[in-house]
Image 1: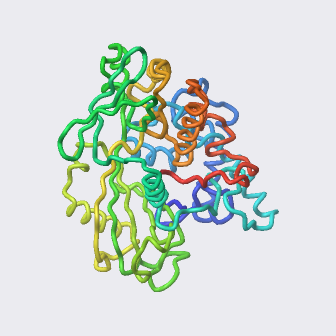
Image 2: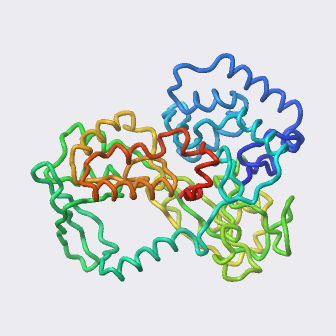
Image 3: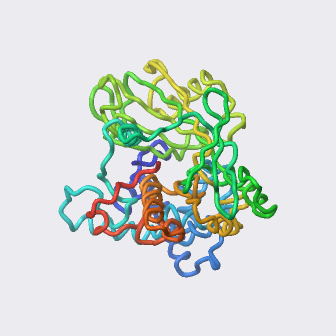
Length: 420
């Protein structure tokens, strides 16, 4: 991945090297260094907000230049109103010091051919990816489950969860044919948003628990997919299509709404039917029901084409096709009533046969591999007859796991980290 800032490409995360200094300019680098040293000498304590978290690790100048605007574009909320816990989930101990250390070690070491090994997984340069994208794993899983006689019901939203005797007894859903169906079970594993889960309990949860659940917030997501004949020439671009080498490009330019670009050719060439074209995904962060969310698909495609032109990455005349995909509740937010989340967890953990897993199921900004691990731990608890949920909640809490993972874990076959 790279950052696109001031019409130039920078390594992501920013690397402390000569190339970065050359692009930023010596004066700007000097102010970054001075600001970082000041933050080391006079850290913000207590560290309550995401702004505190970033400034303590990168200095105020670097925070204002590379973190503040992008983070606020993602969340639609000022950094000084977001819990520092978000940084603990997504950035952990990555800092200017760690970036410098990584750069020095890389200069001294022979390049490794191993997959997924790095002191920081934010710094991993090679990783495993399914041939036809992550959906391939779940299509294959569904196929194997059907072979085992498991019935999977799609397009059936949950209407309520029936409680009795301190346990969940049944779940009711609207089937695709418009009829309500009730399913009884011994155990329930939920990946649905906690807000919907709590508000769907019957009999209802206590008023305070419902109040906290109703106050949980989410950030929604739109991908505008654009098919191009070619991109405009940029540094490191290759071939007749001027294909950039990135999986993601983080857009730090002002004057555009797009937050990040995906280059699907580089995730897996099998995801693009015609190898002589380039599929770009423009990612927009929004709120379900807001102006951007309600913008017609055709206008969103036009917006994407215009912003690619404005960024000087592609000509409008080279766009062959476009598609829009909306993803509600893509990001569980660390503001709203999140400060009281432990009250929800305490209440739900007392239901012995209900297990919460996944990003929305736990209201935690986990990557896909963490979500898979939480499900695995739920299965292990059920098979062992345990109602202890703490191992599940401990996923992505240990500083050695998320964005800071030891090389030994990377070598052990843990799934490669990518945002889900």
